[in-house]
Length: 114
Length: 116
Picture 1: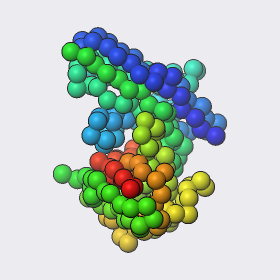
Picture 2: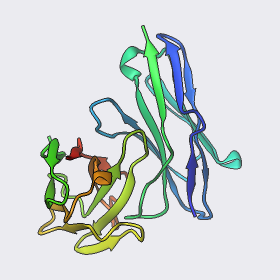
Picture 3: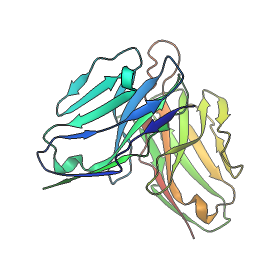
Picture 4: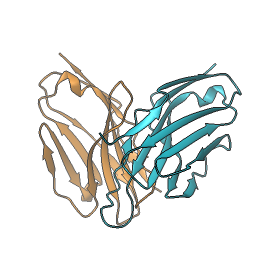
């Protein structure tokens, strides 16, 4: 069985602070894919990043960075110099193979205050 | 722009009155998914089509059905909506299998269903 845990239900920061969203996963598969999605108040899930289990390189995209550590089954997401527009629910997700379900974590509500 | 489109964005129905939600995509993806997301919860997969093959999740109620008449369109039918079916319904697509497959699912804006 697969499971994704996002222990932080809600995080509140002040603009320009850095914030890290934690994600821990469980799977018995050797090949799998990890994702982060952003869900703003409008409701649409916006794809942010995909990582496969063989690629442990960390990635940086602008103010966003991701730290994938297979040894601890974690895939954490950091926003540097947060902005009010970053306020949203962020979901970490896992899937096994092509055409399979995404198993989502429960989401972290991030609020960035001006 | 290529995208996943869901209509309507907001749907109100009465208890027990059948309702259909629609999803279309211009991405030419071969897999289409329907997720249900209740308030403050994670999306939950109801079923998906891999090409023409329908794949139902084990815990999806029989009240929920789906049709995919062609690559571009997929419908979610709720035969007898109950109050507990009020939720956001998200459609997603992905390209799977063969060259260029990449697993990431692209989501539409969702349809928020209210059951009175």
